[in-house]
Image (cartoon, rainbow, N blue to C red):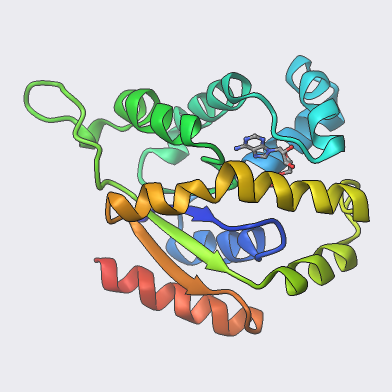
Amino acid sequence: MVKLVFLGPPGAGKGTQASLIAEFYHVPHISTGDILRSNVAEESPLGIQAKEYMDKGDLVPDELILDMVQKRLENPDAQNGWILDGFPRTVTQAEEFVKKLLSTSTNENETETGKAKISNSFQVINLQVPDDILVARLLSRGRQDDNEETIKNRLQVYYQQTEPLIEFYEASQQLITVDGNHAIDAVTDSLKQAVDQLS
Ligand code: AMP
């Protein structure tokens, strides 16, 4: 069963690669950024709350994200694997993910006593790309939050709040680092190799 978290700075290619890998292994691609953007477009209560953070390139508060991901993981299509893209993004999200979300949403992780056994039930792909390449990629993408000032803030937010997850997942031996500074096809091939080695 393919259960992967895609970690990496903005512009590393997480979205592109997560989508290709999800299609290849027939699991849903769950992008918190995409879910948030559709909420913003619909002007849902979550979207209205999230918009101010997203426009600045700041992170949306953990409670909102955790509720949103919990609901998405309860969906029937997520019962046999998933690719998470852009979540967890803080140590709090990573801790709550394991404590609450995985234990309630994924039956096959339950032991006979009903307690969740969750430690190594998913792997984390760390897509590595140098900063100058990230900025160039983001500037050429043209998304609403891809202007120079917001990009600077998003990179800073990444290094402050998300990068600590690398050590966090290294410590639990869940981390697989893949060089994302190659052509799309080459990175996809490396990712498939990494995933196939897991099974
Ligand atoms: P992304 O498409 O992953 O780059 O996300 C776009 C924006 O959505 C980010 O800059 C954040 O404002 C917000 N966002 C996405 N995922 C998360 C998350 N896990 N935690 C907090 N904010 C998030």
